[in-house]
Image (cartoon, rainbow, N blue to C red; front, side, top):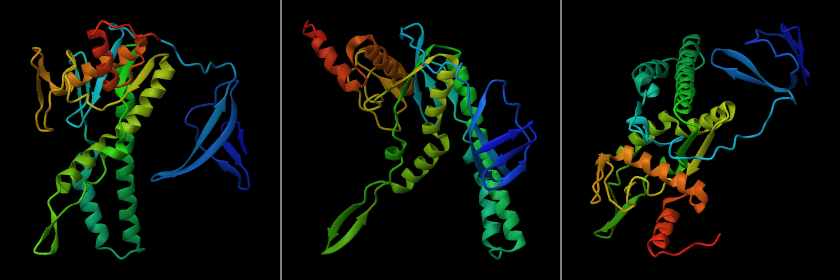
Length: 299
């Protein structure tokens, strides 16, 4: 149970009165429901859950159109590539702090564990990680507001970060009766995984959901499979290696591969909402074949 007294201290169950500094006053009419005590690198915090039954909780229902919708492709070089050709660069917060972090960790390794200097360095490392996390989250919120300032509906890939950052499969062979491990590209994959985790696209997806709800706008998620290997205009497959950054198709489309993906993501989202029941490229291709045959799909 949490009790708030004149915005100066709070009463926690089994603990008693604890003085606190409020981030901002509790709005009039709101009722404190729960409080979660959190320990951060720079101190203790409490996250309060408030309730006001007059605040609507409904999600905005906005019909996506070509004019009010944008598709975005999430990446490493460009954090966000929009279907209108605009891009937002990846700030790479962890990468920029990697050298400083490595020096602190090297010093920590040379200290006696549990000593005063060890605790001081441990605190500095924790604060650096906290700075990176807060800077990343601040960037994501600002980016989300910027994106929704350009559109009413945002179509995004429903990425599975866990699968994308999975270790490369082990490759083996038998030579002279002995088991031999072959190169599997894990060294390069480790660097890519670190960059993907630094980008925190999964967290960004949650930020987009929250900002969309707060602004009364909408965000749609589509299956990402095939969005980097097909042309947005004709939907034909155009195989590309990860190192190939330009998309060229026989239909005449020639543009950055990330922009092509963003346009294709938008197209899939619009087809899905237009009654086609399509939320993936696979279903979009099936619908294209049906339309090419002049058939009518009964719904």
